[in-house]
Image 1: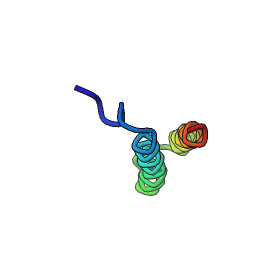
Image 2: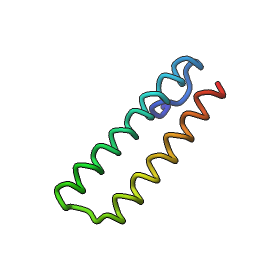
Image 3: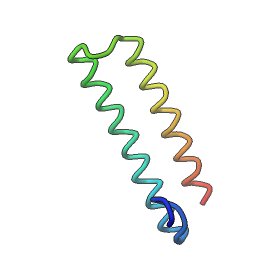
Length: 66
């Protein structure tokens, strides 16, 4: 049994990566909402945004390499 996003054709994999990148961007939105509602601190918001940006860049690099 294959995991989600594994195997398949290169276009299918690229599509999966683009969906993943959109999910990371949703993480930025969730971070913003969490901060506005005071669920997280300013430092936690900054750390979360930095990690989301890093993940998005990594996914973009992988997508562009295909």
